[in-house]
Length: 172
Image 1 (tube, rainbow, N blue to C red):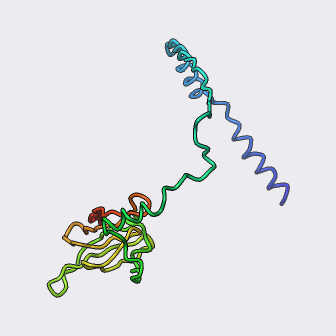
Image 2 (cartoon, rainbow, N blue to C red):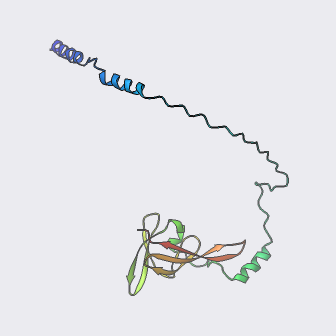
């Protein structure tokens, strides 16, 4: 039985020994018959003059910056009167930077328009005017069907703050 199997196997292998490479030879001849193209010259190498760094008179990048006196900056911040309320309890959407929050829709409840905001963790939150969101103390001042408008309180100069408008547009 084993002898018969070996004979059949050898007979099948001898059938695979076809020496017909006509299509391969035809393709090689076609490629060789194509007209030769001129080789493009190498691009000109531009000589770049070396730069010599001279650190004399420059600030040491490993030393901290000199801070102005605190008394002057405190007076400026009292003059503007703008500062974040750090005593209030932070809301859930203040854990996320504003650029990872996406407005996905609105809901009209009790004649009031609420915004639907999707956070980077996939959770959808319902917000209204007066809620806070973002890392810069952003307070929602207006919700319309295609965007949520905020006023953020961002640091300006050392010890001073300024208000900055921001918005989140409807994305989905």
